[in-house]
Amino acid sequence: MPRLVISLVLGALLLVFSAQNLNQVTIRFIFGPEVHLPLIIIVWASVLVGFLVCTLQHLAGAVNGRKKAKKENKEEDDE
Image 1 (cartoon, rainbow, N blue to C red):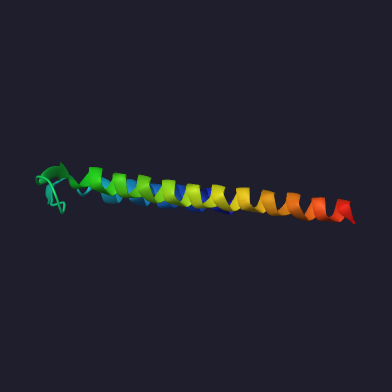
Image 2: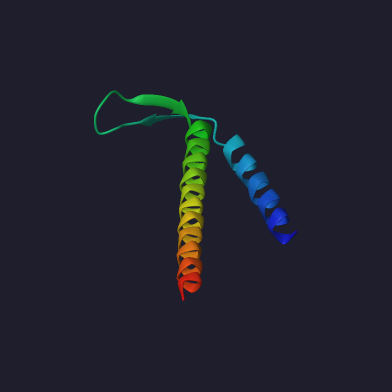
């Protein structure tokens, strides 16, 4: 329950923050042309990338944990 409340509060703060940043910004990549986008898109893209990175790390840890548990169970069965 506390996790849900914290998530809702952070989500609301993110909405308020992004809604106040509607002005256009220029993004310069190392290669390629300049891109002009509203700051709200940059903020949400950053949030999405961060969410995906965290999710992939969590999934990788879960897979490694399962593999490790299977290996330990197999070793116990062999004994």
